[in-house]
Image (cartoon, rainbow, N blue to C red; front, side, top):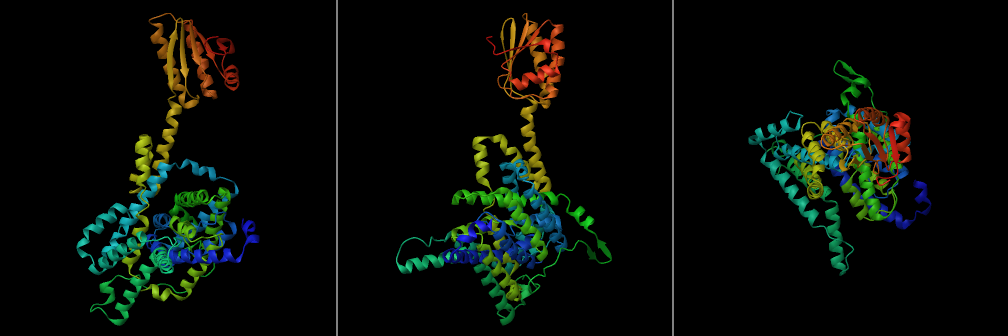
Amino acid sequence: PCILWLPKYNLKWLQSDIIAGLAVGLTVVPQGLAYAQIASLPIQYGLYSSFMGGFIYCIFGTSKDVTLGPTAIMSLLVHTYANGDPVQAVVLTFFCGCVQLFMGIFRLGFIMRFLSVPVVSGFTSAAAITIGLGQVKHILGVKTTSSLFVLEMIETFQNIGKSNPWDILVGVSCIVLLLLLRYGKLDPHVEGTKIERYSRYLMWILSTGRNAVVVIASAAIGYAIHTQHISSCKVTDCITLTGDIKKGLPPFKAPEFTEIKGNDTISIGDMLQSIGSGLAVVPLMGILESIAIGKAFARKEAYNLHVNQELIAIGVANLVSSFVSSYPITGSFSRTAINAQSGVKTPAGGIFTGLLVIFGLAFLTPLFHYIPKAALAAVIITAVLYMVDAATVVHLWRSRKIDLLPLLATFLVCFWQIPYGIIAGVMVSMLMLICPLAFPSLSSSSIMPSLIISIQSGLTFPSVENLYDYIVDTVSTTASKETVSKLILDFQHVSTIDFSVAQTFSELTTYLETLNIQLVVVSARQNVREVLINTSNPDSILFFKDVQE
């Protein structure tokens, strides 16, 4: 895909891509540090996951706006499946990339159609609440040991009496500042005096890079307390800091497919068994998140997004990222929005984002030591605050309340176990699809001595029993009152039938013959008629064009 825009590349596009790339970089660095906290990994892994995606997507991606990197939802999934083990997280990235690349090459993107909007909405909302409430412990400065969300919440509030007031002060202050900067964002392109334009542009920069502003300011406070002894207490007693971070860039090497823990050697088979359903859930959710974002911005910016090529781009990005110790990455809505608002012209903007992250890893990691955990928790909470999808719930309530069932199933079960929540939502959705097949819409009327039964949908094997019982009950009830000599089945709305249904008609004709009732099928399409003739006794069924005939 890069060969489509590369020959037309010019200095004006370069300038726009640099500005957008740096704006995204100022967001992804603090977010990467924060999201690693969600994933229960050392925070440098958030930065390891933030730079390679931009380089790869520049070559293989078809959206100028999408930016790949760590996201809150993927970090939560890594927390669920990698169990805080960096080696296992990187292996998950590798196989995630393999699955996504396989789906892209063999054009299997249609599988995503089985994840309905209510299921995705329920999952996203549950994930947002889980992630947000999971950071309360860092705002309070308390420690927990449980990995299950409900138990972790109970433990957090049981230890609320041990809260650190300094952490609370830092966390709440950061949340307030982040929200003020978010809502104080001004459009820099509005006409006005030179001072007004510069003021608006400055406010736009501060608002766009608000995560970086807050993290830098809180790190400066942590550094000052630690080095200048501003406080009478030790820094570790006042503010809970991120702590030591491995310096420098990650080595470029293949993922470790065996791991030694103490005296035990964990094989790749053991790792895959531990990851389990994550081998399907993580790549599918990564695809869903990135494709949804890409389509939204493609419609807004009026360009085409090639879904299968996007699967290849995401798959290759995850595969290569696993060689730099990344955990699974996907498209980020917030950073993609910043990219688009900053005027990005091509996917090359990701190169400059990646370079900024590399600069941070190479030279700034000693300073990351002083970032308060409460500040990173504030970044996460304000990021997921707007992921709770209340709008979809309202729309479903007003339009089709039954579609709330898969949403609620996914939402509630996700608080127990995320994979089970997604499975529950998909199963409820599938059940809602199957039920109309098992219970087709049937109606009856009579023009004596003929009984007419109209079938309002296609007939397939799940409907066999219900169809047979309805016909037998209707015939029996009517025949007990009046003489019925013909049963007319109106197939006007039946587009297809299968062998099981045709076989049932063979049994039905036998039953009707005992009552001296002739079976008549009207308005049957040619393909339906052929199945009935070839499966049942053709002499026992009469076919006509319509009821009047």
